[in-house]
Amino acid sequence: MAAEDAAPGEDRAEGLKANAIGFVDALVIGLNSTSPAYSLAAVIGPIVALVGIYAPGVMFASFVPMLLIASAFYYLNKVDQDCGTTFSWVTRAMGPWIGWLGGWAIAMTGVLVVGSLADVAVSFALLAVGLDGWVDNAFVRQLLTVLLIIVMTAVCVIGTELSAKVQNVLILAQVAFLLVFVAVALYSVYAGTSKYDSVEPSFSWLNPFGAGGAALSGGLLLGVFIYWGWESAVNLTEEVEDSETAPGKAGLWSTVILLVTYVSVGFAVVAYAGPTFLAENADEEEFVFAQLATDVLGGWDWVLLLAVSTSAIASTQTTIIPASRTALSMARRRALPASYGHINPRFRTPDVSTWWVAGIAIAWYLVVNQISSNALFDSLTALSLLIAFYYALTGVACAVYYRRHLLESVHNFLLIGLGPLIGSGLLAWLLVKSVADMSDPANSYSGTSWFGLGPPLVIGIGITVVGIVIMCVWRLRAPAFWAERPGVVDPELVHGKET
Image 1 (cartoon, one colour):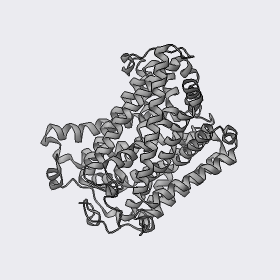
Image 2: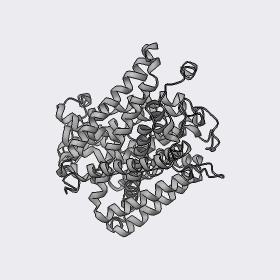
Image 3: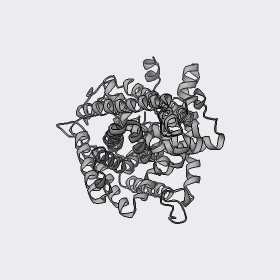
Image 4: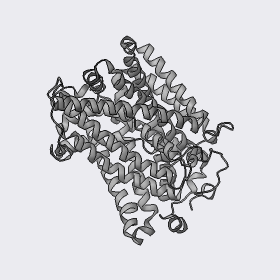
């Protein structure tokens, strides 16, 4: 075992509140972390522009690597219930240097995306209540965005139970709004009342290869990341009942439910609006959903606008969870300053790391907005690099950590070894493809060149370099963590916990 003071399954003195939430709560948090309605609003147009009517098929294909990586999360959590997830697991399997970078990637995803999610939540809420002019007022919108981040951070600190209750309400509202949209849109298609060139849905749309290999690869670059975020359920492993299996199952079921949601809405949107309209407006992104909300629901368009808003509000809160819990785990292992591991004595949540994540996210949001709104979108694009990196690391870590047990059964070989490795391979390919695409400034939102490269790639490289510098400095100041050595899973944990 890598470090005795952090062995899996031990009673941690730091005091996260055990058994604070159940399986359903973890499942809801995993779902909300992906921000389903907002994710659909952001990618449906660009995906249709690439693959046309085969957008549902691309969404289905994008699900495959996520399911394989979710399997890795499930089996790694069974033997190591650590809120640091990827950081802890990769450290145990592959050593402290790679593990630290995995943890850094998770923390930075929260910093990059929280401000944007809150901005979307505020914008769509204002549109829903008819305050369109406030959306165009940068000062008002950014002020409300910062206030929303502060409120959602406070909810995270006050307690996991409160977070779960808020999430339960938000997911019910979000799913209800999306179901209303799907039902009315499909009714309009079959009734012939759509104002667009609607087409009747066909099961052939589920063929991801229908538009050709090149279009599929481009669609996967967009589609695979709309599933990102489900692992928030696993980051709460130390606070979930039945922590050995429930968080992992919540992550797995989150991806399945997301698949059904995305494919259903994909069918409805493509059928109602037709591929021509969606392709022509691919660059508008969120505008597409706002426009279709009015066309499909008429005076009830606020229903879908609120769906996107609640989606982004929920994700604003839950996206803070992986970053703050990872920082907590890193501090406990002495990979970060001990202050990040502070637990609020009343609420038993990691208050210091949570507020640090929120504070840095607010600063990033405000600074990037001063550059341009497109720069904010470019920072979101850089997310794909970090996501692909730490997901791929987790898949490899699963196979490496369990390597002495992969040939014990077909089940182990396929679900613990081969599956996660295939998922990692697909994500590594997407990472390389993303780097190639982002190197061209023309492919960025701003269209400008930073040091001869696209802004998203520069942001990704910058975050990596800063992480490496901090890691090396902390290695010199506190070398204890780097004394850990990679190992393999304890056979008693494997054979004693198999289902």
